[in-house]
Image (cartoon, rainbow, N blue to C red; front, side, top):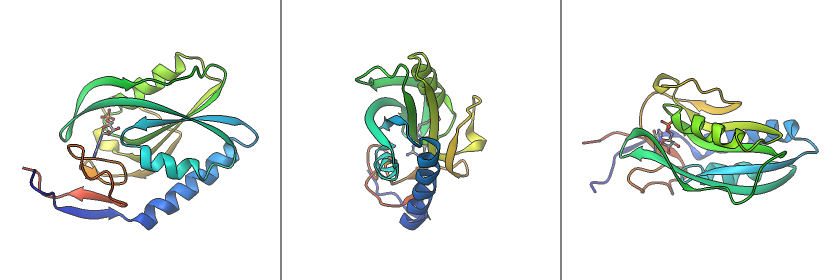
Length: 175
Ligand code: 5GP
């Protein structure tokens, strides 16, 4: 694979500041409540692990694996690669996603969790591309609204790579 040219877009500092803000808002919202924090794999693992460390309440961790992307575009079909390991009925669920693009994945995840009858469902996405939405997708918390361009880093990949970048960058040289 030819190495990509990556233009820095959101710095580590920008990301950590936003994580702290969302963490503070969620701490206030969930005061005194137990929360099941659901990490959507693989892309949100880094955002998720930073965010739950800012949650000052009792948290249990669950992981939901889905894939819908091939290369740099969404296939529109959501495939579950790993399901939750415990029922979430009557519990407060926080669903943590990396990025909402067409909205198809987030809608699928929301419906899948709501079908399990949680006490409440709160959604958070680090990034949202409002121009790319194909289905209506209401989110409770959004870190940054970005242009309809492909980004990598801080958990987000291209062909499996670049997830370990500590910042988010825009890809310049797609073939
Ligand atoms: P959606 O179903 O909203 O179209 O896509 C959501 C999923 O597509 C995200 O969880 C993420 O894995 C992937 N995705 C969407 N946009 C981007 C992007 O700009 N960069 C990367 N690396 N993945 C993206």
